Amino acid sequence: MPKLAAFPKAFMVALCKEGTMTVSDWIKLASTLDVQGLEWYAGFLEMADEKNWSRFRHEVEDTGKVIPMMCCSPDFTHPDAAFREKEIAKQKRWIDMTHTLGGSYCRVLSGQRRPELTLDEGVKLAADSIQACLPYAQERGITLILENHYKDDFWEYPEFAQKMDVFCKLVDAVNHPNFGVNYDPSNTYLAGEDPLELLKRVSHRVVTMHASDRYLAEGTLEDLRKEEGGAQGYAKRLRHGEIGKGLNDYDAIFTELKSQGFNGWISIEDGVDGMEQLARSVEFLKRKIAQHWA
Image (tube, rainbow, N blue to C red; front, side):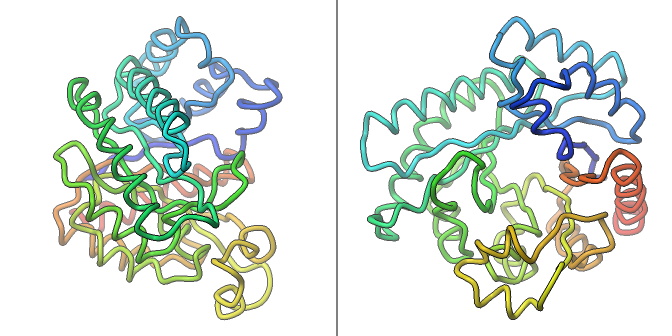
């Protein structure tokens, strides 16, 4: 049966930019949630000091939870080889971080959708860079997970593999036992595409999932699809909301995942309106998991 983890979506600015919340504060808050794990973020300010890695692992485990997965954002589509080598080195450090925290899954991305890149060039740069990290990950028992992502906060351009066809081409280009997909249904809407269509194309490769839900604050899905890559819709039309009350069909999603034998971690990337909302999302997902994996 899949396990649930939680991600501090509502507190990212406080944890990563302002420093107005400590990681220990988040661990204490999350200890009240009925989940088995906490998804980590490489950009927490306190993670810059490697001495904190083991300390935070123990703090989480003292609450009866574990840290199964790491969220980070390598940029592998830069045309300069020296830049890509630095990104590969950063990814290896994040793999070490995941290993020290006791995790098994570390995110990778393609990189930025730089306008000068052709489809084949971008896929090759990203695939080669991911493959350069895989032996290092395998030695440490870590699986690299490629997410159908929208855009890192600090990037100029959206994700190179944001669109379904590009994402699937990249997934197909990397064949390794320590590589899989982290499926995020909500991000597919940002590309103006159908999350169930994407899932059916990659469900045999999905090893982890981000659970979230989005609702339309204005307009229609057709309006969203007319906007370039759904990019503007990220800011204007779509809002994060409580899971089970938005656009995603979790019965259809879980039916497909169950049919492929999925039994991995589902990390909740919601709760932007606080801990009570996050707790309701937990309860919704627990009910659905029990229903589909009974």
